[in-house]
Image (cartoon, rainbow, N blue to C red; front, side, top):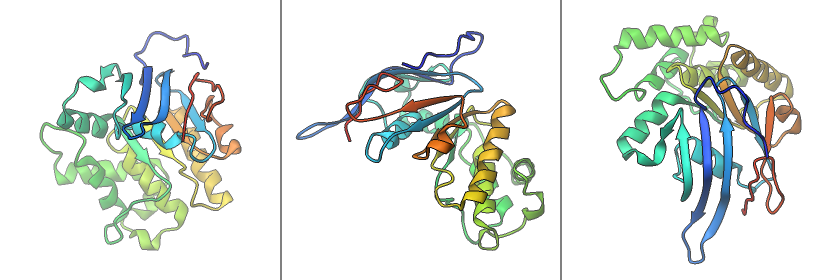
Length: 242
């Protein structure tokens, strides 16, 4: 079992208390057996396992895309099971920034516009004005090294630049957690290294990063690695059935 950090001064970003997920049948399918996990503020954690082992289930639960059928999941100390759907959506928008293998950018919107769109769902009380969204989007793009590409369309960007736009969009709302699903899967090795170096820098600046990967070299960059494997005890004492 991976033990949580000994620093008790902050509330964990992620806390699983016997969290598991079983899809109803017939027959029922257990995707994640009940497990405990703590990820504290500022940690960098990678999650590995073979295809079909449950990495996607883990990501969906952490990202509030699927609700566990067992246990309790606290995000920043908030019991997610106690929230109605609207509040759960708002919590996900405010606290979690997603980075996927595919960039999911709008082809006919500039880099700034794509990032600004990430702020439309970050609060339930009012909406930021267009001018503020644009300025914050530009600041986020500067942070990921794309100050020279503010007005470029995704079709004019390289794969690495498009992923940087996607990371800027994930960061623009100042989330507690950056949740990455194979973020270098569509990139060549040199470009992938530059994206991983960017994630390293974000972590050094205090961002909490959880990264799902099948690549041991990518996994080795983190402080901790969680292994999910069918039928084999893992570092979070978690058994998974595909």
